[in-house]
Length: 186
Image (cartoon, rainbow, N blue to C red; front, side, top):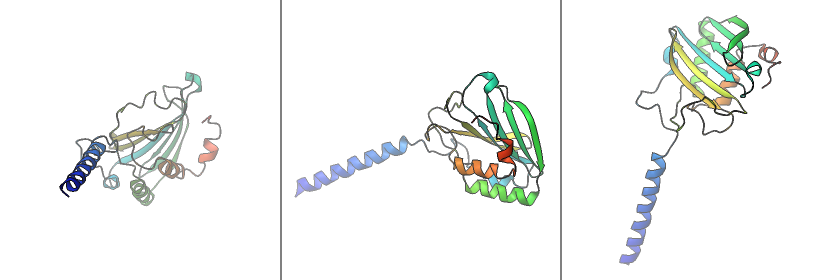
């Protein structure tokens, strides 16, 4: 009987050790050393949220990206050319506080401000044949949040929200999004 209790004790100890190591190695940890950011705290401030999606790594003249920005007063759509991100035919649309408030609450629900710690924090060169998306929040022109994800591996990137849903929500802010992006190669 004593040996049975000893065996059970060893099994429990091994399980506890495994759980401990799994928690230490987790890549979905919150913002290191910082309090969690509440996106809705920025609704009544001079804020702007931005989603920039970079296309695959190609020759400089072929490089294309799309930047979508939303603030309480405006929505901005810009296609960026080359690695210098030269704006091509930027479009500006009006916005209002009520629309911005609902948009920010929706982004918050989709995890726009959620971050995780990953081994490789650098997005440069990540996902060379896919897309890299950068999620930013600005308060009075100062960057408060900057995370990223890519379409190659779900383990990549510091963004811990729902990337596809956030992208759809940003795109839905522009009624002519499909027309504006019809000539993009990604």
